[in-house]
Length: 459
Image 1 (spheres, rainbow, N blue to C red):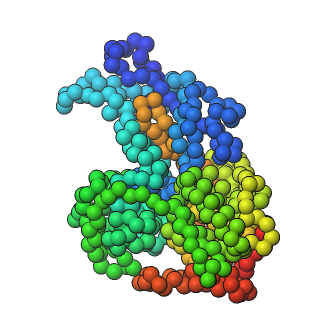
Image 2: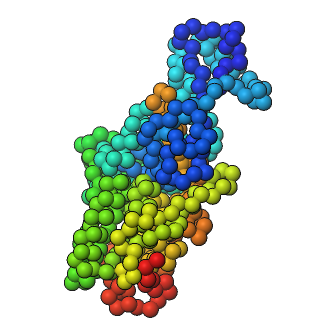
Image 3: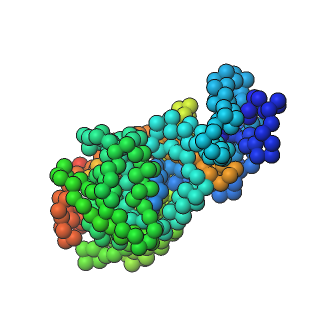
């Protein structure tokens, strides 16, 4: 935040003078499951709620892999002595605006929030940002799995079609649909994974930030938005979408191959999803099933705690992922030891595609590195950074990249993705009854086909 004004001792703007405050990120060299309050070196008051989240976009707000949600800490305010010269220009500008601006009344809170936003924007990191109180509240609501909007996960790619960290949309930075949520207005309107959104209601997105584009797309239930979409490099097509309240059904279970194979599709990673997954898996195991397909296609992510719980159903112990902070310190997160499908004889195939991101990649990467499952499908999205949400005193928040996450073998999949053991491309015009990746998974489980990354025994 803003450090204390060095001129405040001899310059008083009265009771409305903005308060002096600053923030310090919670230490990140500890397992992700621990709250900041339990970590050594924490200072100041910390909110009770702390959860790690991984996602690309949840509902109407952008997220990127890995968040500590609801964290807040405070340190002694003030400009560090070593930085007084650098901050002098800031304070000179601030006081010039307060004392000399003649264009109207100055909103000091708006100045402070603008300064914070400017600091974060100067990082040129599309996954870091400043959220107003309303945006922060909306973000938390989005994470609940219910929100108003079109229900599409979005990210960015460059002109070569590669996952990109670009910050301003334009000729080499395209807004991409990672995946429409199942049953969402976007899916019903025909929006597909990989679609590039180039205009909204006839206005180009060029020059906008990702957050600015997001704000144009989302909106109230019942309102319509027209998206100009480029698909497969062809001319833009216009798709009208009526916004609605989107509720994600995060676990879908059914039987395949005449009841021989248990199919579990996970569309998001909330704590509720982890519980529902456990219940569905337990039902299948009690019914005698030992062959499973875990479908993570189109899954943009969610809570790391949920990802860890789902991986731990199949892996008894050992690393699930690593977190590497800014100092290069790596911290291991292990399986919970409470899984119900870790025994010998349980076979698993995991389906992924380019819409599988963040927490989905943690799950797929862990099961692949630990040789617990065969990964089938298309290379995943490629999101391997961790953000921390830091709630500020006025209810606003920072979203700040504070770490990388790595697979158990310490692979960083950022902009690379998880490459399947068996690559199966799905045609863009494939109908609902044409699913070659699912067909291959069923064949692997029922015919025990020998192939690279063939079915693996329990860890």
